Image (cartoon, rainbow, N blue to C red):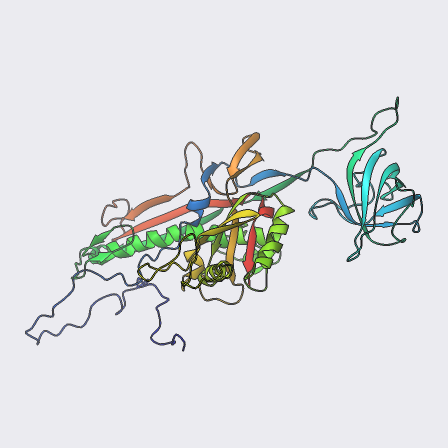
Length: 475
């Protein structure tokens, strides 16, 4: 059995740019002496059609005064190299270690000349990277050649180096040791920060209706999600334009991408924008963590996610915003941990009986960290991301709480939610959500146009702080 393709569901909005037969009732026959029995109120067959609310749940909105938003995020406190080799043979008491990789994480400057952060007198652990290897050594650094990206180490073990020459090893610093009456540490390390930036984009929309159509009354009482109602059709269209614009304010922040060099958007003419912005999906896909190849459906899958989170910020509480399939997969995974007693299915903290509504879903679980599950309507809506296959995204893990960053505008450290929106504003201009009316119809009296035009505008960008703590779940 399967859900049939017909009858299906509409993907187009009812309000078009021009009056169509689908917008107005045209089936009138003046030769018919009998009036039809009509339902005056419009039936809301798709329920609440808005898809916004995600950013309102997890973020905040803050003003910004510039075309460019910049912030600094802390780098790692400790140093580890994972692609090093020794020039010495096994059992050697000393060795020269060559550092060939980049600092962890990989977004830091490359290792090698002038980059290695190891100093004389520091103690290091050196571990063989080979699968199932148990070989490791601890030693003290006796000299450093920053020009060639090497350092000399003397091992503490009497048996010397436990691994062969040229074997790839990892090195991390765990302390230092000096003799009595010696000088201090030679050299120092600078704090490592990452500087990120994003640019706001201008989002616009408009609704227009002629003065004559504003005077036309219909027999259907129309309603919208924000409570607007009446027998005038243009009221519905104007309010639906507003609701659509509200959704775009959020979905643009989720989906926005920067325009690449030599792209068509860069060379586009006219009044349309051509720079783009870094949306949440783009940022997490490039600077965060990605789970690909389907949904995690077993605890072992989540164990690999948890192990990655351990290597990042280790945020205690996280919310996973999921589509319907991912939500069911998590429910099934958690249900599989239940023993299914003889009395029937017994999810949760209680035993179900025949008079109780069976709850087959879970709101969250704890395994290393707290994970809360929340359905994201945007990923299910058939007019948005619901049902697409190419570039499909099944969920997004968002850390809860806030983080401390250095705000370039304020010139000081400030606490910010991991996700928040910056909108353009000053003492004289607030572009968070602008709306104004032009024309000569309705409430407008500022031009000779026999119509009313309602304009909408916002200029904003989303800031994804600590993207390394986010997870994107892709097909």
